[in-house]
Length: 136
Image (tube, rainbow, N blue to C red):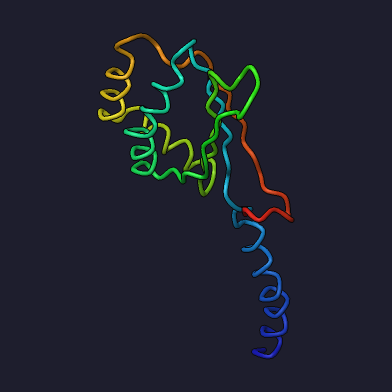
């Protein structure tokens, strides 16, 4: 009877690790964000990120991957491009909820917009790394 039970359990033991692996997250979630500013307001946006936003992103669990401005072209004067990373979509949602409700963020945003609104448009895209990407 014990021998028969063991024989029945062996296939379950072999399959169980596969089920666990299938449920594990596929890797980090990356978010590409592109900000278009009102004319002449890119410096104010960069200052806000430099002095406040980056620190608050980290506080709320966002991983800073990188920030760029176009080196040339029409977008060079009014565009900030950056990438953030999160463990998964749920972590992303919780991080942004915390950030947007943070009193320090609201204070920094309001102070930076005393001379007028900064951001005209935000575009966001979620990215998944390829199997050959150095970022996973």
